[in-house]
Length: 445
Figure 1 (cartoon, rainbow, N blue to C red):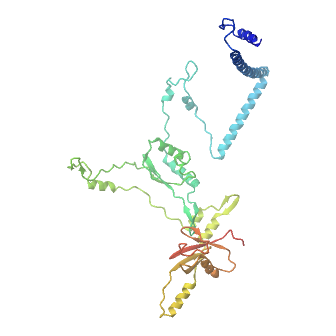
Figure 2 (cartoon, one colour; figure 1 turned 180 degrees about the vertical axis):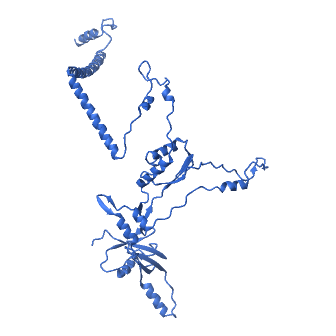
Figure 3 (cartoon, rainbow, N blue to C red; figure 1 turned 90 degrees about the vertical axis):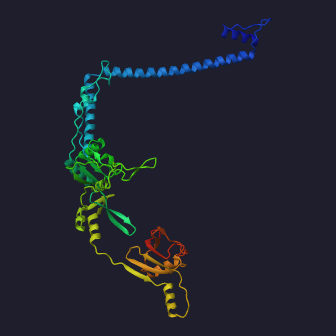
């Protein structure tokens, strides 16, 4: 019975298929093949049904979106002209407020929005063709006219450089820490030499005014900006020292030829007089670059007058001028030299009192120890086998009572000598050494 049902179902789903029959009239396909065929057709139908469901969902979303859009358009069409005008007026007011805020922002930084000239804007636009699209192949007479070049004014450049130097910190000294304390260091200015036909910048080659990069650099200065090509090297700016030779036209020096005698491949010498003579080379090398003499050094009073009165840093007011003035005009403190008597000195005294006794002088290291304030220096003679602990004992006996804890540091290489059992020789303090004392911030008082 199952076999007859499967035969009917297969012939109903596959009407164009003619199953060959045997002499008894039964199909050759087995029941297993019919089941697999029906399963494959069922999976194909399920896949098509799933795909059609997805397409139907996407179409429904698209229809919903279009219905909402149509509803909005109908709503806008039904609005009165007064509401449209009010909406446009509101947008215009918001744009004007944004423009005003941007102009105020630029004004805070000393900038003014100039805008673009109307004629220049027209020249920058391409002409439209008859189809309404931009056609770059059409020739525009306005674009063929070159823009007038900006004239380089050395007077404006020199005046703007003076203002830029004030912003870059010209004449302002920075405190630089050294091994002995600290000192004031001035920023070395960069040299710019102006010629009639070009400039020298940062000891570089001659740069002609016809070079676009040179003109761009000078235009930046004329507009009151630091040159853009130096911003990557000096992000905080650098003072510029100007050497004004605007009335002199710089001429490139001819390259000197080889002064010797030429050699040919066959071993013969070339004595042709086409090379420069020694006198010509000597006269060419005698040309000197025109430079200005160095400026005289500032006195202490002139330097103090250039310093600012106070500086605000991290919300605190720091008195710069008074502290530097007291530091420069205060009399230097006398340094005290203390010679610490050690066992080496005592042994020398005992040996000198008994000249008949033969003795061998031990290896002695001369160590200078500078106090943490720098006011006192201790001179100690110790044996090579003495330890850092012995050195600390000698120092404690000659330091003031109730002195704070300290660390012993070597100057070069800079390291802390904190091992009390290490010998002087192991620490590399022989035959002479200089040590520095430093307050121990980790100690508990």
